[in-house]
Structures are given as C-alpha cells and as structure tokens.
Length: 149
Image (cartoon, rainbow, N blue to C red; front, side):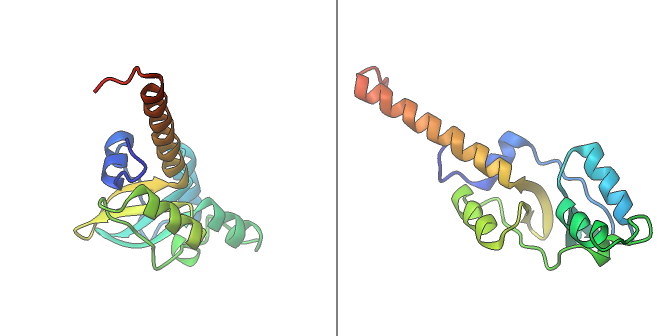
C-alpha cells in the first residue's frame, strides 16, 4: 500500500458494493436504506446513469431544518447534482484534495459511464494512515538494519 495508491486498489481492498435508489424514491426511502446499509450517502441512478447523490447532510439541511416531510419529498428535490466523480485510475491523494476542496464526503467511482464503486473520506483517510504506518515500519527496519530485501 502506498500513499499514491489508485482508487481501483482501494476498491479492491474495500469492495465495490454500491447501493442506490431511483429518482422516484422518496427521501424517507433514502434514509431507511442509508440506515440499513450503514452508509452516509447514496447515488441516484436513472437506469445506469448517475443523476445525483443524496446524503445525510442533504436530509438534515433540506428536510429537517426546513420542516419538510421525508415521505412526501422525492430524492430529486434534495439531491446534489451534477455529481463529482472519480475513476479507478485517480490516486488517493487526488481524491483527498478533491473532497477537501469541494467539501464533500463521498465520491462515486465511474468507469465506462457506469458506477463501479463508492469511496468516502473515511476510506481515503484509512488508506493514508495505513500507507504511512507501512512507510514508517520500512524506514525503522532500514535504520535498525533489519530490513530484508
């Protein structure tokens, strides 16, 4: 594992399962699915086309704080669109910059026009921490003379 690792490698370790909803789903449906799947955001797909993202943050800001009904509101009214996406060839570092700059927490991974995975800021941080630990371990072994080549 390395700091410049590719998102495809991260997905290989994490898995590429993606749960999604259609544009006709209600916000309530989205919140139920997020709770069941223990995720903080869901892509909204019209067929295989990514048309938006809905997150817990969208729910809190656009439903709860505005006194709207989650059962009567379609996800299309609160989803973020257009969606910022990455490909499996993007690096973890590039994605860290993107989530920081755009102030988002989830990135759909798209290849050939289809969503092939999702990465969260937590996934990116965990990858970075693990890569740093491995680097430190290698450096300590080198310094102590116990490195094996």
